[in-house]
Length: 209
Ligand SMILES: [Zn+2]
Image 1 (cartoon, protein in one colour):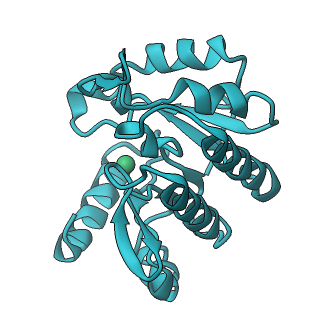
Image 2 (cartoon, rainbow, N blue to C red; image 1 turned 30 degrees about the vertical axis):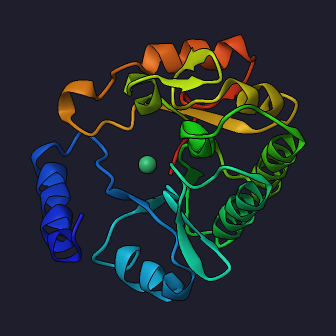
């Protein structure tokens, strides 16, 4: 969304709230984390005329002062560590009600090693300590599968990630991440089945903003 589109977005949420008074209508945004803009998130996005909650969706991360792409540039020990540290830093701000697709780095990631395991453990421990739910993102299930070695797998959720996450008391949200209304519930059943397979603590029924 462009910044100039934000007032219209907020207005449409208010209109929906007025049109359907029996339904609690909340406004939210999935956001990047830009460290120097923290007060803007608090005062503008979450301010009185803004939205009610933010979701952390870190499609980019900082490494040595450079913006990197979380889809395509998490490929080795150095980048997985930078992605992890940045993700935890964003979580620790308290700005974000939950963390979207923590396993987004899997899109182009190949194989699995001890650095990857350490990254998952650190993110899960932070989620527990900071009480931030982690999302199983059903949009990743709808995307074109990728080849990882000789295995064709979905871009995310990453089986290795959630297998390790199951060792932690993390709260998990299964979310459609609908980019259009016709997939509002699209593949959420598959995301729930995925979560059940790993015996994860799904909180969809009790989660509140
Ligand atoms: Zn996203």
